[in-house]
Image (cartoon, rainbow, N blue to C red):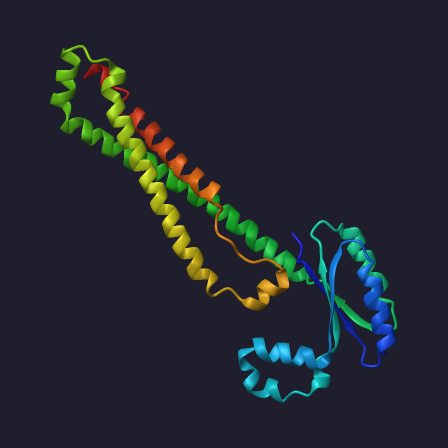
Length: 242
């Protein structure tokens, strides 16, 4: 995973010709999708607009405290070797003070994403086990309440499949409803957290958080229905002896 941005900070003495030449060269680099020049005044204005505390001491900082820069949008497909080579060449230019690729942020974000993925996988296993246990127990209780009906159906020649079908359908519906509730809860949590998502971090990473696509949400509901049906079948394994 890589941040889709890079900042080329310019020296105070960089001339307009040097800046234009650098911008033109960067626009021709494969993998660089956009080049935007940000003057010291623009940098101060943008920082003041995003930083809530800019009304205090930060707002009093002179324009010179904010270096001019060239902001780059870098394609995710750009190889790391090419990016490192481009950064090394830019740092050697007399008009360039420093180049920031936000690699440290990328590594931290990557570790956070991997930890979140592992936690989500563990939570999914717990939820699946809970669905199996709850649906299985519910179906067994329903079978006990309808024992007389089941015995009557068996006496008149009903097959095991005919008798089991309503219970399996009930377990499937319960599993689907449980999965739907989980999706709704996940959506509520997502949109609640998204409202607090740091705009600067989103701009830095170049990505916006999005909720599960409808295919994934529908797949979760279908999986819940299948788990409910499996749990119902497992709980009815002794129905033949009824």
